[in-house]
Amino acid sequence: MNRWHTDYLPHPLYRPARRFVPRLADWPDQAGYDALLDLARAAGAPLPAGLRFVCDLEPDAYYETHIGATGEVPTRAQSWHDWFNALAWLAWPRAKAALNRRHIRAIARGEVKRGPLRDAATLFDECGVIVATADPQLGQALDEMRWKELFIARRADWGRRIAAHTLGHALMETGLAPHLGWCGKALILEVEEGFFKLDAERQAARLDAELAARLDDDAFLASPRALCPLPLLGIPGWWPDNEDPAFYDNADYFRPTRRAKSATVTA
Image (cartoon, rainbow, N blue to C red):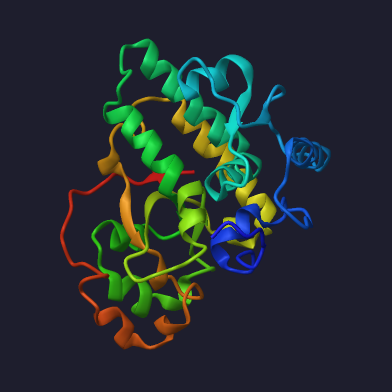
C-alpha cells in the first residue's frame, strides 16, 4: 500500500507525531524532507543540530554508527517505514538520539551483532509505546497482563491517570491496517497526577526528556523483557469494538500468560 495519504492521522496512535505532518500531495522528496525538518525546528523541536533525513542513502558503516557520526538518517523514498521513522525523530528527538547513542556505546563494547541491550533498544525503537501512569496499580495491571482490570474495571482512568504515547515507527506503519493480534511493546513510566493536566505537546516533551535521560544509563531497559506486551486494540478509544466488554474475552489476543515483572520507573 504505497499510495500517499494521511488518512491514518486521526487515530490516537499518531497523536505524538500528528502536528509535524505537513499537507503534501505526494510522497516527500529530499527537498520535502528538508522542509519537514525546517518546519519542526522553527516550531521549537529540540532536534540534533546535524540531523538530516537523506533519501536513498546507503551508508558504509552500521546504520546507527553512520547516524551518530554524520547526523544523516538513511531514508528510503516512498517507504512508510522510513516516513514514520522521520516522524518519530520529530516527535521524540531526545529519546531517539539517546537510543542511537545507546547503540553506539554497545557497538563500541563489541555488541556488534546485537545482544540484550541493542535488542531492547531496537524493539522499543520499532514497536515501543510509552505508557505514562499516575497510579502504580495501573502499571502493575499492565505488567501482569490483567487486561479486564486494565481496560474494563479501570476504563475511566484512561486519559486521566494512564495514557499510551507511541514512539515505535514500525508500529505506526502497521497501524495503517490495524488487525487482531496488533500489539506494541510498552515501557511504563510513572508520573505525578498533574501530568495529565498538561496539554499533549507538553506531555510529550516531558516524557521525551525523561526517557532520554534514562536511556543514557545502560542499566535501564537492559533487555527486551523490560517491555510489556500491550494489545493496542484494547486501549479505550483506539478501536470501536472494544466498547463491548465481550471483546476482551478473546484469550488469543488478550493472553493471560504471566510474565516476569518488569520494573516501573518514575518520571
